Amino acid sequence: MGIRIPIGYDSFEDIRRNGSYYVDKTGLLWELFHESDSQVTLFTRPRRFGKSLNISTLECFLNIRKDSKELFEGLEVTQHKEFCAEWMNSSPVISLSLKDAAALTFRSAYAMLKAIIAETCLIVGFLEHHEFVDPYDVEVFRRLRAKTATDEEVRESLRTLTRMMHAAYGRPCVLLVDEYDVPLAKASQQKEAGERYYPQMLEVIRGLMSSALKSNPWLDKAIITGCLRMSKESIFTGVNNFASYSVLDKRFSRYFGFTHAEVEDLLVAAGLEKKAGLFRDWYDGYVFGSERVFCPWDVANYASALIADDDALPQNYWRNSSGNGVVRELASFASLDVSEKLETLMNGGTITQRVSDQLTYDTMLQTEEGLWSVLVMTGYLSKADPTQVGDTVALRIPNREVAGIFQSEVMELFAQSLDTTLQDALMEALWSGDEAGASDAMSGLLWDTISYHDYGEDYYHAFLAGVFVGRGYGVDSNREHGLGRPDIFLTDRRRRRALIIEAKRSTSASSMEHDCMEAVKQIDTRAYARRLHGYRTVLCYGVAFYKKDALVRKTPQSTSQGEL
Image: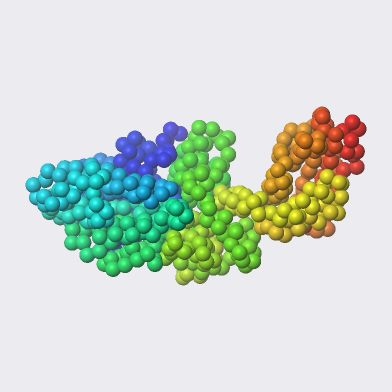
């Protein structure tokens, strides 16, 4: 219907000037600056839930060097006329994002951090020549801009800039810091000379934040965003009037993510009301506080795809926006209890778990509670009941998109950690036509991994492919052969032999034999083994799965290629 949906824009000003569709979150301004008494506010949310856009909105509304009245016309915040008269374009603002201060080594990451600070100095370059700014601060400012400042000057940089802004405008400064914890997250994952550079980066970020936030007379308010709140690092220890809001907190919950009403309005504006069910299945299911929300990144991407092509299918947009290693960390955790809980989740169930929003990158993945907490804070799990309060809650996988991430990550880990003895036993049984041996070995491998039968046959197809690829075979899945597409086509070119497998998921143990023979019949009637020229041996199997048990049956066809 002609609406423009912004993809990848985190600039409020660009979205409004381009006439793109904007989901109004400006009520956050009123609640932060009129309803809240906190001087320092930290918002932690998963990636792609609007943190950067909200920071941009705050900067555009507050910045004394801008005239933003036209951009905010008709938006929620303008209902508060006296508030807008007092606050709109009335504050000196320092705004920066630390999302790019990440690298493989501390030296590179620190250099990127200094570059971010230098760029911030360029934005407020007028301070260098302002008559009321202290000459000593000007000297430091020039070194910061030239990236030649000392380590101490870098750690004190935000405090220096707020002091200079106060001198220039005669009023305290608003500090906006987006993605404050990205340097710590990256540092915790990397190793330099055999050690992570986390301690060095922690010292830098602690100094940067503490000097800016703690007993700073030139600071009016600070708004900070990130994925996690740090606890043991003491980054915020001693900061006066500090408030932190995570996915567990009710207050401010509607300002991150798209609410149901907001998604309905967007779909109506785009003429996509008939696709609402797909959006709910794939991208809904998150609970922030007591608010049910969609992932904005996914909604925007899929709506844009549908506007271009009405037949576009949902995709996993969120998966590709960052790494998903925390899921594999959980799957590899050496605990039977964790495996059982993970299996429950992947079958669409819920688990009850204690979670905390105060974590540390240094140790958060070393305990089970830490792993569950990180999964909740980063959006891989969500509260099952929005009315639940406290730190012990029922958890679930929010939607089909995230379920797909769990499936792919767990299956990849499974493929890397299979029992090679069982794998060898399975391959020997299949190549020799031993149905009982193949059934036993396949069932044994299933019992060593996570199964989630509610997801249909796709899981079992991925399971089989993982087994065979792990033994070095070439595997095609659902490739055209004969009159149809077998689930698995495996080749051993050196020995000129092949396996064809058709898999079925049974609904009960008693139906496995019937389902297995149906798979055998399908191989025969659809002539999957035809046109395999050059292979001396072709073995065809039907396989039935029920939960963690497998039944294997060989087709009555001859294994001689010449007789197929």
